[in-house]
Length: 314
Ligand code: BDR
Ligand code: CA
Image (cartoon, rainbow, N blue to C red; front, side):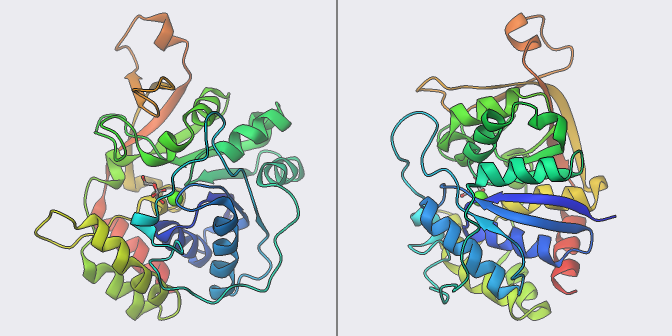
């Protein structure tokens, strides 16, 4: 049976690549796209998700608008320097005429969890404010959800916003702390695996060849994104962070994990740090009382690449 997922997202170029990957997979059933501020402001994230549904002809998939700012502190600065002014590498696709689902992203998550108890995996590939708010709206949410798969964090490698913090977690560290502390089964796909190996420019050329509409969109949008990632390097490279948790649902054998107690730092200097104490590594109650999560630390990159390409080719 296909995995029922809600994809919580801030599109975003690698978000677009991940959303199409999920739509294309026969093993994934997307119940909705819940959007959140992050790479772009909340309004743009919601409108961009509608555009992606139009391109993929997924007109029945509800799209909701989510939280527009972090749990604590001022409005964020957005990542237009990575994703372009439009979030799609300045390709400016046509706006959607479809309306958003009127519910907030958090309310949608709660409603769907109540309607499908124990069946839904929340796949979160942006800052975690919607999930934190859903936990506030329905404290029993962890009992209603099958699992949570997060693209975010950096357990044993440096961050990409600060030396210790990855962007999704840094953008809303207090919300992330709430989400990582809740009583549910969390798999984290952070920079430990998503930055492990880069994709060459030919990768998106192949996606376009296999799927001219969806792969073609990713190929065009990714040119700006590759400019950003290739700065200061000899080679031209790309990273598709957000597709990793979806790949894991489709083929768990692609990843290896380290299990341990996770803390999310919220102090100004370390904000967004996701530090892991592997099982048996500490006697400190501050760590042993923290919830256990599974952090992806190994990935079979050739097989992952093959899965992306095969799925786009369907
Ligand atoms: C994460 O931050 C965003 O820029 C990407 O969409 C991805 O979710 C990578 O750090
Ligand atoms: Ca994202």
